Length: 321
Image 1: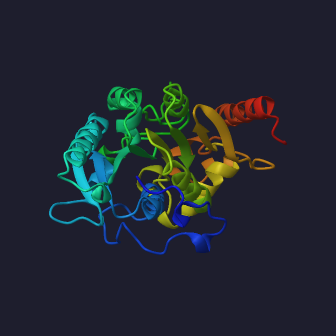
Image 2: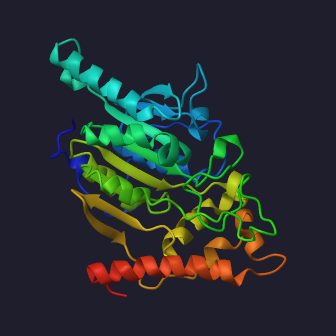
């Protein structure tokens, strides 16, 4: 593990302090404007080159198409349901080799699962639960674009209420599109009491960097849910990714928070939340809420969910309104 007293692990205060060196190089086959890749690129600046990325099948499978890879570290491909199990195998093998003197401790690497929400929220939840329960010393990075994006934007259990997907079309009996609410993965993971757990956004790079710096000083499961605006699936112009990433946080739809030993802290609390409509409008997956007839009931329900969440935060923590 890295020396926690190293200057590189101190919290940063401005963008100029973020490392300039890139550990994920340009020229990938990932969609232009991918918010998940932007977040992973920032995370890699903290993780550094001594990494092995264990990739669950999904959008980011396109990052490493044999024999090419943009990563300065190593890459291992797994099925959607087994990335955490793959990470266990890599970590255990490294520990055995180091203990036997066949690999120098200085050559140890960070083991990082990279998976989308389809794998994370659904298919691999059992394997990940087992890895956390066993106290595996690994990183888990979920790029959450709120659907099965690599196979046509089908609904996952991360798809929010009101969004239209390929498998939740808008119709006479489903005017809001997706009727299910988004699974609260943060709380499911928090119940396992991992060493560190956080949500991050590519539009808040200082917050993201400091969370990875803090986690790098800890041993055990380190879990991250990255908000990943997706122009291909959410149907907006790729140049607007940064705008939607910021709006998700400023409307309160996506909360920036962390949990250390189960204790939750919100790392960014807007003084006044912007209306959720500002985030919803302009995304093709929500167009049916505004055209041809405005669906006041669905929009109000989304706003009410957000208001209820933050009212509970303020009541629990005493945070200023």
